[in-house]
Amino acid sequence: MGDGEPRVPTAIAVTSADMALPPQDERTVPAVVLQDVEQRPLDQVLAELQTLVDHHGHVIVVCSQAVPPAVERRLRTVRSLLESDRIALFRPDLPPLGLSVLVRQLRQLASCDLSPGVLASAGRLLTHYIHSGALLGSVARLDRVPVGLKAHAKSWVPGSQFAVLAHPQPQLVRIGTDAALGGPDFGTWMLVARGQQPADWVTGTLAPSWNVLGMRETPLPADSAAWWGTGRVTEFCAFLPDLSVLYQLVTSVRQSTCHWCGIDVIGDRCVFCSAGPPAEELRHRGARRALPPATEQNGRTGVRDGTRGRQGGRHSGPYELEQAPAAPDVPRRNALPAGPGG
Image (cartoon, rainbow, N blue to C red; front, top):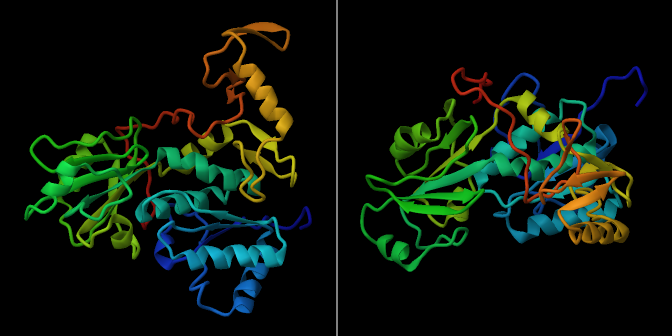
């Protein structure tokens, strides 16, 4: 692409149409829907992915863990046959609605000046700020969240309702007068997908307790019943909707270059080639962790807190996915702007 040509955003592809939520703002790029990749002829899927790579340069394919194994096998086969390190396969452990929200956030960020590797790595980062759960009529077949014997027994009582948070920390409570779920400590919007389970508790109790800035509704994803183990389900998801906040989160993390494919990334693993840090860096980290709290760093004595240091307003240490940076300040009183689709 020449200097005078407009930039073509990295393609964000999904494996089902209900993962492509309406745009959050006017800059949100469309999602590419790869329909029935495991059922169509292989040469058709090959040609489709090759065309996307030729046009966009890089493709990030987001796939739900609820899809049949044949879908992932087909995608990995296509990537191998194309011998391309420009196709990233991303399967985060999120419920269907939360995954759709994450896809839309990546579509928002695709309009910015982020390199493909940083954009792909941002998916793992942003999952830490998504609070995704459901209101269930039964937890008898729920295997995504730990369920105790007492909850299993109560699940058979007619009229029982359970509130479940699957991400970021599993929680399960039976709906009652004092039922509550721990939520985000920063301002979010909430997206609700009504199913066969009434959503009154979500809209009337949970949303106010989480101090959400606004709320929208969307159809229930097709994979929700399979993911949650019951058709009596209403999903909800709290998320950061504002592009400037998402961009600030991603750009606050130190970038590095993948030692294998040479692409810029954030985090410990390249999403495109799956390469982790080189052995020398791992040994260096082990040596640093063995040092006492007061250490000599770059000729100066510093105190390590065991988490993240800051240097010039950026996270100076390698980004550990278990230690996500704090969310930027989000105003609670004035609602953030939302797109027509919520």
